[in-house]
Image (cartoon, helix red, strand yellow):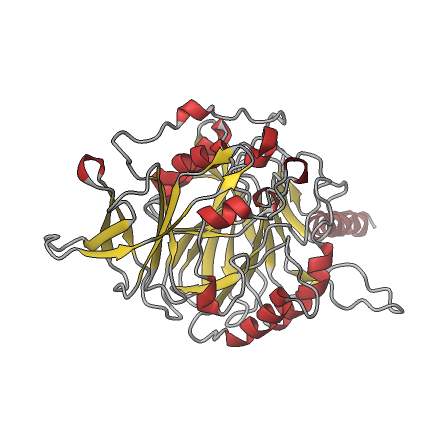
Length: 467
């Protein structure tokens, strides 16, 4: 009798522990101070020395398949030679430099006039090759480099950094340099909210300039794949600024036409073994809208035998158990989630919520008006949803989670940090989230992801290990 009772107690304990894992996920016990982050002052990032020196240099992929690069920079003056980029293969003697002219523009915003914004697209690059590139003239020449991706293929390894809601605070600085200290990163998937200029009086556009200088040590050397967030809208009717995304569109060019998009706010690229789709949370997306029609057509073009990893960037998260911005992405989820499940999207990265969260593979697509099935359920054809809005912005940490933790939430933590997505082959990728802790990145969450097209099996995660 006693043995039976012990067996019953043991079985009950096991069941309870399973219940907690399945229905509770993990809420990290790590506690970070929740006060707003201190922004670095404008004078932290002065313009580079030299007459008309190019600054705020950043690059992004310039075509659909990875043989192009968009080089973007700013100069105070628009003089001869200031709109030209010269480039050459790194292991050559540099005697055969090629040059490409840039398109040049400037914009006004309230009482601010921008410098001259240059964007040059280099085409026909060799895969998996290091290039030097040069901007400026005379004594103000500045030189940088980039490495093109390997040729697109199903088993091509590639490593992405993942950052969102970065801003330009001291915490932002720690996030960026923690990422830069990892030699694995080859390109950055950026989930929106860049400068936070709109958090300042009259949307202080000087903050766009200081942000460009802040990220240049990284963004001039490896491509950032940009998604736009709410802080890029810069709509301010009270000061007569009614053109949404005006500064962002002038400053950050992307190859949207290469994927037949009609807007730079939604587009796609192929890079190594990944097919990356960028969506806009703040543009119309319901049926018959341009974004909706484009995505419907775009998903049909994905060839998983060529690019097995299907990744989506969007700003407002669809699965979020934080009280901040709770369910703001719900209408977009209802519109697009059936397509994501049908097409076996692997991962969806979002920002907006200033904390970290990783979901289980779940979907909520079976509801109709009579069946009452309106709660997410495990679904091995569904993506993992990752909220990475923890870059370090001025508004501080979002530290108010719903309680109890919902079953769709696998791991959550109110901290700043960045992530690494290390794609190994067509079946496996290793994902890690690195918390900013005591001036070093600490792996607080990690999981071996299995590709939904080739290996749709359940995955297991581990937490809290040192880099």
